[in-house]
Image (cartoon, rainbow, N blue to C red):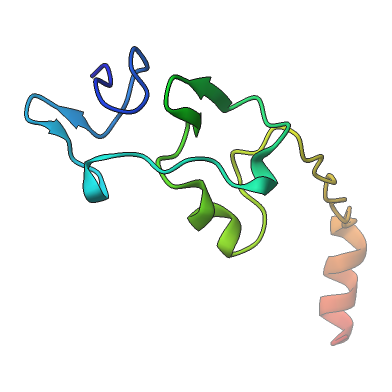
Length: 93
């Protein structure tokens, strides 16, 4: 539903016919780590995240998985040769 409290006009998962169902009936403003993120948007009451209602909780455990301003390193997958692996297993290694 469309938010009618903090992020007016934005589609929000926590909005219902009775109002905002998130803690304290409102979203929390973005934190310092959110600066530069595309999901941090300016509204009349301040700057809020369009993806998550309480950004401080996302940053508490490390990096926010919604952050668009942080580059993530691609994990290199180890290529395993199936023939060599089967020979190693047969040899008991």
